[in-house]
Length: 113
Length: 112
Image (cartoon, rainbow over all chains, first blue to last red; front, side, top):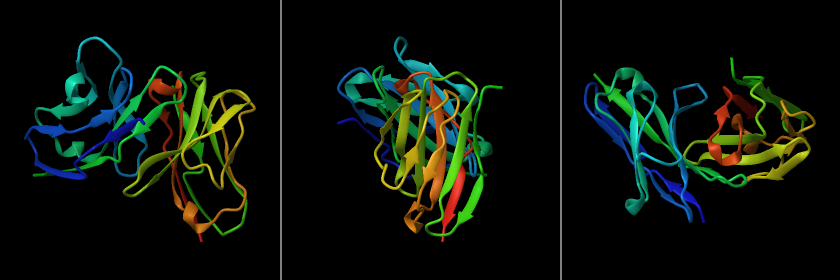
């Protein structure tokens, strides 16, 4: 069965520090992979997506993610975190067929001055 | 502007009183979907639609109904709301189900 695991429920980083949010997936075929961000009281905004090709994907707001097939991972990174990055981050996996689209349970990011 | 619009943003209702949450998208997307978001459980799919008059259950369909009479609209209906349906609801649309969804701003529903 398809699934997405975000092992870290909550992460705290200092402003200006680097960030890595982990995502592991279980999927039988080559997946489509996504990262969404949800700011407090807001809907979900797509940060980046991977369908195929270059395994390092650039997104909005200075985020990037790397697809590692051997590790079934799609970790999100940012070299220098800003206070405005404090939010909930969701990893998701989809496919080219049907309605297969699954979310992880999210990682809450706190940024301290 | 490409968007998914859902209304209302906030709704407080009483147990058993039928309600409808509307959802509309202007991107001509084939797929539309409803999710509920609860603390610690992430987003769970309630129903989805692959096209007009084509709908199917997601992971948590009990207590909900949907319809897709027009491509742009996908209302969520709670015939007899109960307190366990208190949640944050999101409508979303996608050109195809697995391509990633564009989300609405959410409807916070409280059933007392």
